[in-house]
Image 1 (cartoon, rainbow, N blue to C red):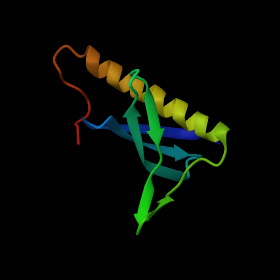
Image 2: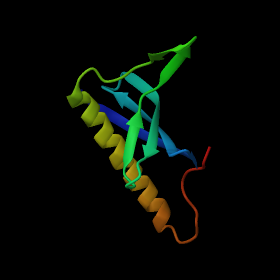
Image 3: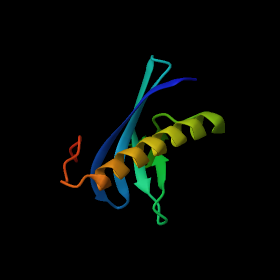
Length: 100
């Protein structure tokens, strides 16, 4: 599996949610709406999208094995760290993204 693209879309923080991520796998599959939350220690965790149908929640998609899950998580968290670190270092408060 080759993850060819990772994009992070920051949102106004709410209940720990700080961004949504999307990835492109093998230049053929787009996966979006991956939620990025902060943990109490300041690190990040990701949650894959679900859909509510009646009283049940169905997984829209998720990794099948832990190796794939770790690879996705590591790349998304790395990109978040880069993005949020860069925005914190900006002296004028200007960033290359807008909050949704």
